[in-house]
Image 1 (cartoon, helix red, strand yellow):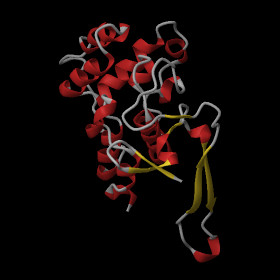
Image 2 (cartoon, rainbow, N blue to C red; image 1 turned 120 degrees about the vertical axis):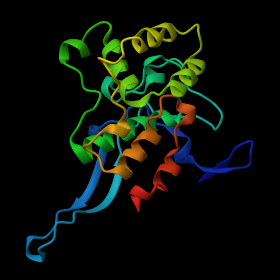
Image 3 (tube, one colour; image 1 turned 90 degrees about the vertical axis):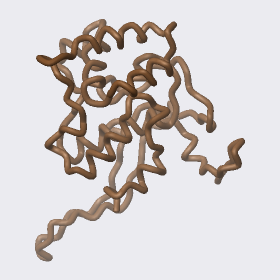
Length: 210
């Protein structure tokens, strides 16, 4: 089934869905282990599905989901933390983190339990967002996206000031535990401003998937 946007671009219905809780536990993979007798190390993935669909909503092209605090804290996009405008690109962000976990066994937004359970847990997790996924332009665009009236506008500015020569950022482009093509894909999927991220369709066309 497909629908058309105002620009007459055709979309499959699944491309209009915003899941809202992308995390490893909700990714189901049907695969075949390599056969020892065949002396090979290739695992054949037959099918991948996303489960836990009760919070899934349709967000038409050019529209946004506002208000809800979607997704688990360590898989959540910055715009969801801010309860600002969210759409399918918020799922793209979360899925990029899942890919990093699956390929490198790294939960890059994991913080200690006392920080994760703190009343201001946003402070610790969002600082990692800014360290890994935010350049100057991305921060400026993100602040424009959420607006000055959003309480996270000032919080982001406060967190930005915690970086300096003795506390430098650690952007995804510098991660040594990912291969170059995957780093490029993850960087494109996790750009701080959701309007600057690639779509799921564009991600699947990336050279890393070929």
